[in-house]
Length: 240
Image (tube, rainbow, N blue to C red):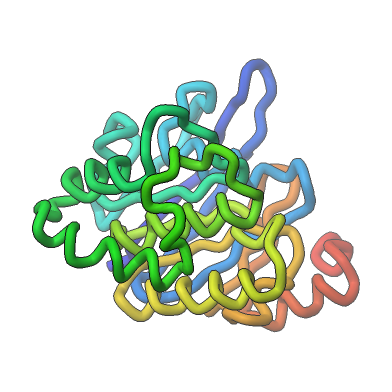
């Protein structure tokens, strides 16, 4: 069974139709990539699947391991195993990173003792030991925010992870670390979708399948060689 299936998904934001019939499937334990130029609808897909109230699903279906995802409120989608790492993670004043993750892990069925055991391991893996008592994303650099998102992924072990531009604003060392964590999560069974518009991160974590989104539709899909062709010639290679 596919971890996530999306069928003929149409999404409107305000009075503008952004997605116009998206179809894709993610397999458990594999890394996938969704590529497309800016404004093509990549972030819209992730936010609509997460249940953002401003992203109205006009038509279509989505299933998380066979369960009707769109019938669930946002918190139930997360509880069921859908994880979204945001392109621009918000700063949350007054909420410490540790307490946020403790509560999130509890919603995913991890008890306090288990949290106490795995939290220091996760901090060390993401090189974030100095952030445990910091407010969530407050004062973090762009790269630190992206590592904090991957820290959440590492702790929660979701069924499906939609990672919106996890490589933006990070240096080479952080990119290698992020790639390693993504591969570890896939090896543990998570279906990963890396959302990006250029293949830099994909050089470190080659995807099994690359989907290309243009004008609100998936117009092509292939193996990792498709990402390399786009990197060399741009998205014109799939417009022809």
